[in-house]
Image (tube, rainbow, N blue to C red; front, side, top):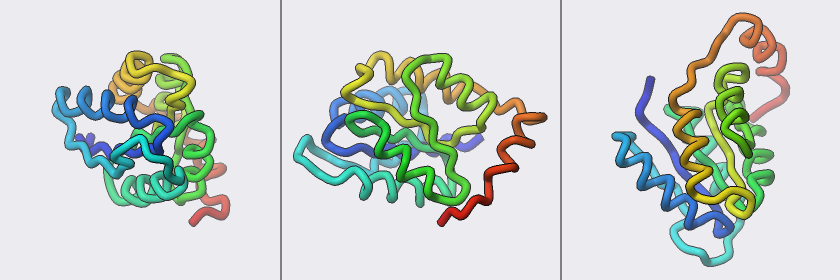
Length: 146
């Protein structure tokens, strides 16, 4: 499995992104921070698009905004991207086991840094089960994406 992780956020979760970045680096991941790099107001689609395009090429991604909803909607527009908005550790585990997510999304106004790091840790450690779950993913993987 690739140790490449892309990370991106808008201003709504900048502090959480910085905490996740420190955690990932401490775990030996090759982290590419796609921004934003401050709390100054910006547009979440720009960062979600950049991350989705990067993940299409290699690795996985952690994507944040205020709610997590906007970035997950944008990322899921891209072919091969399975972005999962997670609020619990079970969400993170199941998004990998059953849905083979390659992008995990969080809301910085919904979850704190500790919760986000705990969910990220589970997500990174969980493998896709395949089988019937692969059949289900195959049923929607080519539905009019970019």
